[in-house]
Amino acid sequence: MTRTELIHRLSASFPQLTADDVEESVKLILGELSNTLAKKGRAEIRGFGSFTVNRRPARNGRNPKTGQSVKVPAKDVPHFKAGKELRERVDQ
Image (cartoon, rainbow, N blue to C red; front, side):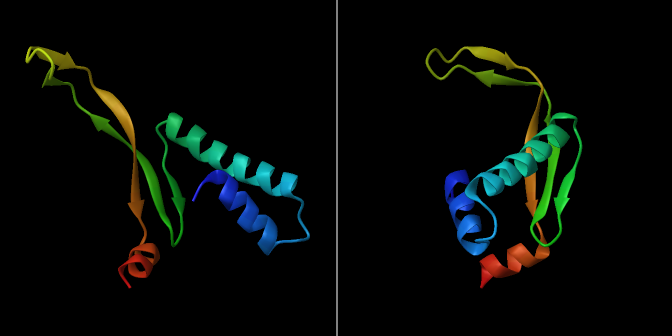
């Protein structure tokens, strides 16, 4: 599902809201999630899952074209862990 599809489904489910209101709400929620992760924070949506930032340490990699060893710097990556309800729904 894309952001646009989510906005259309929410607009259809809540006809009292305009598409612009729904779009602004979705942007706000996703923006706050992004801002929290950018600050190395944790965001949790009960029943859905949690978003955290994991640190990947520096390592030695390999250039596939030349086979030469290269240093890959450490970096932070977003991580999602599904909640119990979501895991159970997907497993059915």
